[in-house]
Image 1: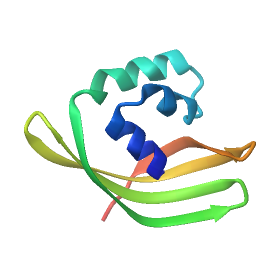
Image 2: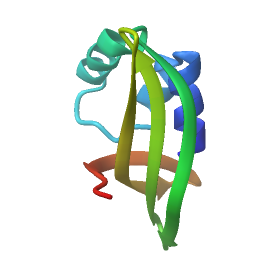
Image 3: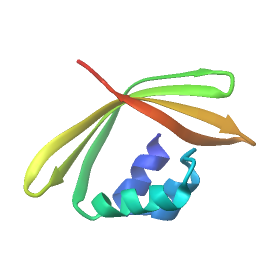
Length: 96
């Protein structure tokens, strides 16, 4: 999770695509490229992380500025591990 957040901060599309389990990498790259330059990330708070074998779950809040407005992305994410590497699978909005 932290490495993907860092990739968003650094605008590293290659890393984000490589660590995302997505059926269409080209489509994912286009989707990420649209918004990645519009946000400046301010911080990451990991609320909870849990691993069950090759599946991991992370609840987090990431804050950002976009179009002069401060916002937050709060999500409960699922990851899977294959060949000692973690991949983002999906996320659901985190309700507080």
